[in-house]
Length: 540
View 1 (tube, helix red, strand yellow):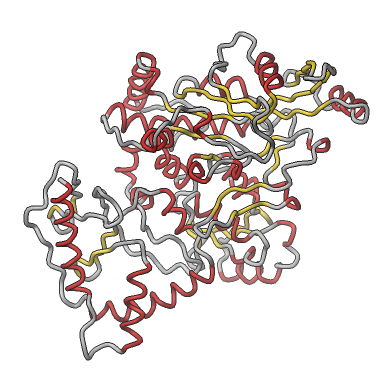
View 2: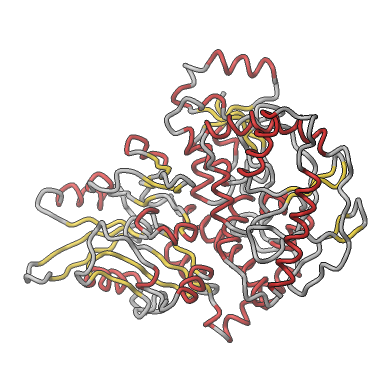
């Protein structure tokens, strides 16, 4: 099998090289050099069938998808200049039609997408993968000056074909918390739930952090006791999400904690247990973690005490979390299996080992008692291809902190919807279609890209913000188009509207239908995992 795949690869590569090589005497040395550099740098592989038709090979690797999202702006500018030169060269190189090779290229593991315009079956193998990709033909887009992804990965390609994508995930169109009106969808959910009830070992792993993710805890001291009592009495009238914990430490001293549960916590865990094996990974002291779980779950029907990693003195606050500490992974293959079937919810992204970054789902840090805390000064949301972290700094805590005592239940509700839909997609592929290579990380990316779903946005008015790269990543990770043309929405930081009043007036004059949206809309949608109502963020 491997020999056949290699043979097909070499044949296709040979045809590509023969067709695409610059012709002597017609191109300058500079043009040839630019063409070769552009060809070698691109991870995207495209095949010209005839003028105007372009098929793009997708890439299943989530890390590569994000690498393209996070291209540095200087790299984007340089890439655009190279692409301009390449377009001139390709005009000559593609005069001759690419002849499709319809000879024997069949294998049980090679998918053959259908090109309806050419009415032929085409088999193309990605050089970076050991398996082929399904390709969907898409129309050429207008140029994006801010370096938007040009459909180079399978996730973006699938989004262009709603009919196909609905088969992948029919739940994206549902409103938050609503039931599906399609009986086929309900039938699929019921079938998956029945399989999981009979075979719980088939469930995905959902690894939950405790502090600042599900709860917020502070020590009661002589200095803060009166202030905490004031908050307890006047700011939390219902008290239903507040618990107190008392225990003796190793030295015999009495300790007391006040803990606030994140709203919707118990409902969230109850619903997630239908689809996930729930695990808790905390660096909190063992006695604190166990007493806290006993308070949250006195009946022991939410959290299995055997599925907990707690600090027994072997770690400190700077120790990185390792998935092998909570899931048995005694070999590289076992580790890869765990990574393909695990989702991590943690407010601190970089505390995990790099290999688990694609599994970490961002969530706003839950800190209603933030005035008593002196840690977690920043919030990291991703690491780009240059191994540089993208962060919200301490000065912009309003973007990543949730300080509401009772009205912040939307964060866990949004996360519940996101995880449920991701799980259904994964199980549909693995259990219903019996694909044992299903990787939950792919579906986490699918889901995120569908939040904005090709919505055209303009970021010109926040280009000089210190967090421009973070905002840009947030928009692209949710599938938005960042463009200077044909956009209806322009993103603005409401704190700087006076500074950009003239630019805003000019844009409005050029486009009377333009709407200015506060950048907080992007950030909130990113952390809640669904697109919020734009009207609540409009800047007049």
